[in-house]
Amino acid sequence: MDNDLFSGFAPLLRDMTEAELLAEIERPQRLLLDGGMAGGKRIEIAYAPLDHVNTDARIVVVGLTPGRQQMRNALMEARRCLRAGRSEADALAAAKVFASFSGPMRAHLVAMLDSIGVNRLLGLQSVASLWDADAHLAHFTSALRYPVFIDGKNYSGAPPLLATPLLREQFLTRFVAEAAALRQAIFVPLGPQVGAAVEFAAEKARLDRNRVLAGLPHPSGANAERIAFFLGRKPRKALSPKVQPERLITARTELEAKIAKLCS
Image (tube, rainbow, N blue to C red; front, side, top):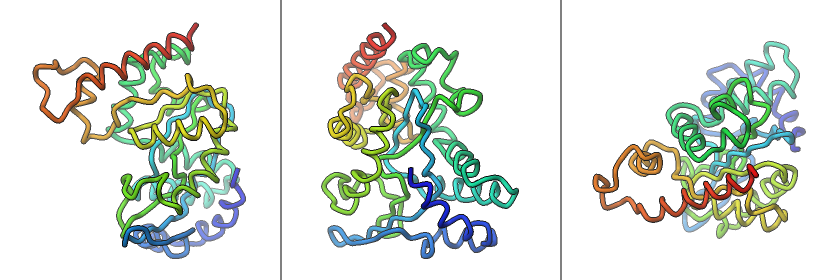
C-alpha cells in the first residue's frame, strides 16, 4: 500500500549525507509531497517512510499526523537500514515501529490501554510488548499518514482536518483505504479530532463501530491531569477546573463495555 512511494525516495535516502537529510527534515524540499493555503496559512505535506501497513494487526493506534521528530526518527532509521543493505520492505517496517509513539507518550498510552483491558483482549500481560516482542499484533498510523506542517510548524488540528480540502483529500485517499484493509482490528484514536475522523472512516469503510475505541485522553504530557484521573491516580476533588471529569468517566465506562463485549 503506497510502498512504491518509498521506492521512489529510497535512492535519495541512501545517497544523502546525514547533514543533508537533517536539513531536509527541517525544511522539506525534495521530500515535499504537496502544499497549499488555508485561511492564510501555508500547508506543507512532506514524505516520511511511514507507508508500511501491517494487515495482520489486531490493534491499530491512530494519531493525528507525524510530527517533525517522528519524521526524523523514521527517515534516519530507514536510511540506516538501507545503507546496511536491508531490503526496502524491511527498512519500511523497521522505520514504522522505531518512530511510533516513542517517549513519555508511549508510557501514558500503555497505562491507559492496560487499565481498560486491551491487554487482556489481545492476550498480553501488557500492551507495552506491542513495541517489542508482539509488534506483529500492532499497526501504528495517523489520520494524516505523512507529516503536515502549518507555516513550518507541526500540525496540531487547526485548520480542521475534515473541513480543509487538502487535508481531507489526504485522509480519504489514504486512511480510509488503510482502515478497510484492517477491519478485523480494533482502532484506538488519540484525541477528539482523530476520534471523529476515525468514526467517519469507519462509516465510509463499513467497519464495526464497536471496534473503534474512541474517548481516551490524548497521551501527551499536556494531558497529564486528565490521564491521571482516567487512571484513578488523582482524585476528583484535586482536579483543576479545566478537567471535565464526567466526560472522562463516561468515556471510560463506554470503553470498558466495548472491551467486555469484544472479549465475549
